[in-house]
Length: 398
Ligand SMILES: *Cc1c(COP(=O)(O)O)cnc(C)c1O
Image (tube, rainbow, N blue to C red; front, side, top):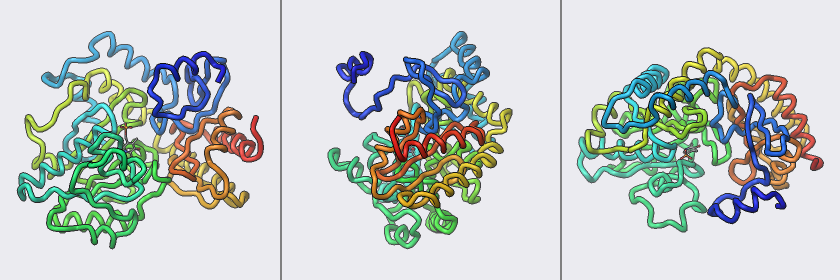
């Protein structure tokens, strides 16, 4: 820790993160560069954010143009970027209405409020319970934390929002067991990210959807990490053919500007939040919406979904080969370009630190999983390069 930037940062920034000892300066494509000019291959993408890679010229130009016109104006008025961004979200999802937020956490807050409002309008104030999953992650605000099934994050902040019941992910019976006459919604990630990279099974997702329809509970799918093309589908639920009543987005929807959204199907859009029920000052301002709008255009122009399917399949193969080769790699889980390797018998943090020293940016998920959420523009050569650096990180530091 002799680096002066790091020493200064530790004097002024609240210590809520144990940061890696690197100071990043700029990015280009799938590579990052630190202040000393060292190059890193990035398989973390700012935690599943930088889908288009770094310094995409068309993207940055769109932001520069919007800065020169108007960055913020408030939700009391209309702007063209917001209209365009919302139209593209609606078209890509086939859903009905969008509310833009500043983060994923706020998208979760909005989704929970919309679900409770729907039930309140239709059934009165007794129907407020929400079923969430163990090992889930939905964010750090009191509301989002209340549906995050991780005691470590929750305990110091209790009491949390009342009326939340937890079930086991991919266990339909455990969801059934938590349903009462007060249940208004079920919230889950289509692919659990933070909790260790667990995709929903088809039977589970379809089963939960059927329960929700039967009892008029709203299905909230958190697509903040697994959405925006990461599984090879624009939204992970599209592969299952299970449309949520409400979906949450963030991370890659802005590819580097702070924006999220909750998106409502027709039933939830018509029957929940009304003027005065919800708001945000910055949410969906023309600056971030110019980014969202351009992101959707570039996904099409650069054939992002096709790339995730072909290179994602190759990544899957290569990771499976590593599991075959190394005893301490227990299994691979995931889809497309959201993948995890379960590590046993040795600390994952140590592998991630060595990888960084070898010029590879990786992150963990849970306490024992190496997580791979690269920019969606990576090539097979990038995968080969990653595997080479990773294998070196298994044995020695740089
Ligand atoms: C990152 C994440 C969130 C929280 O989003 P923020 O933008 O950090 O507030 C919520 N849900 C999932 C699945 C996430 O991966």
